[in-house]
Picture 1: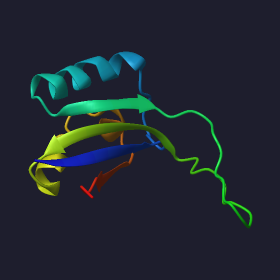
Picture 2: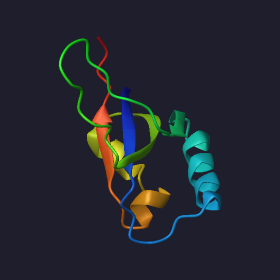
Picture 3: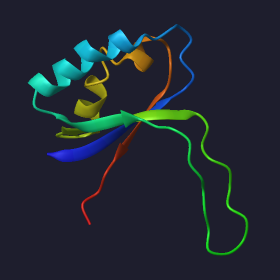
Length: 97
């Protein structure tokens, strides 16, 4: 199994309620693929030298899952409130190093 992170963008075209998350997360947990997640709040970009770029304002949360491959990870978006509301979910593999 591989590890993936879903990065939820703050661009949903329909409203999302906090109540929309519980059934989706419960489904991922019961499938044994949920590895954690959270909303993302404010912060800062920092660099040792030179000016750092601004925060990525469009990313509002993340979910970590396990899946065989990118295709299977994509199937896990069914029911994701951001995805279902017409928003963007960026899927990234978390390589083992």
